[in-house]
Image (cartoon, rainbow, N blue to C red; front, side, top):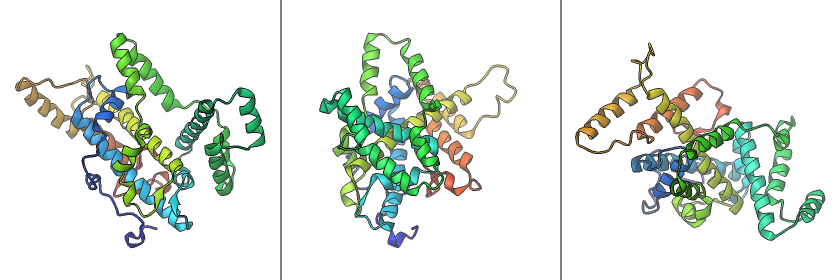
Length: 317
């Protein structure tokens, strides 16, 4: 499975992802996404570029592993099942994905104009295409679940603490906005990779893949791309909070090398009369977040806790 000669996709290295054409970029969209997820109103372009590179590298590696799983079962395309298989170890993130798939099905029903009686009848009968994604999920998880724990995820109604924290942060963020700022915020919240499907496929250079992802698989990949951005923001905000000097903290001197570098660059920037954007997430916050996340997993952690390629742990699964 890890033999490069047998791999259906070329290996991707961090920082070298968009070799197929750098004209395709999500940096502008990512700046708006960063704002909607908790960053400053004007996120830094260099932070968005770094986040784009991280997300792109992770998705290419994810697709490579999904293609290997697909190849092992003799399939011609990367399907939703291949991605679910890769996510099966992290129950919380799997549950979050399954809820997203449920909402995608529900939205499709609303668009079709189905009323509540029709929805209930179709759910009871298990027929029709309105439950397409849910049926794929349930059938596949049933086929690989020997203990019942994966199917239990489908019925789990536990509150998602991560999503709850994001919603609380959004409420605090919007509390001080005026109407113009809130309108801009709402517009940013509507952005997603899936809504720019053609550009998203070009960004990932899907046409060059020997084993291409199906339409439903691309929905999942687009969702995982957004979740990766969201998790980067979650972690970067924690890093930024840690980097702030706290009065009376006896360990305040023990700050990371990343902050020292950021502090020096900020001082030199301010000396030149340029705004430092101190309230925005900095590239050093992203790098430190990735360092901490990889360190938390560590070389001695169970290898099934995350799928790793080229030393970078996946954030979204």
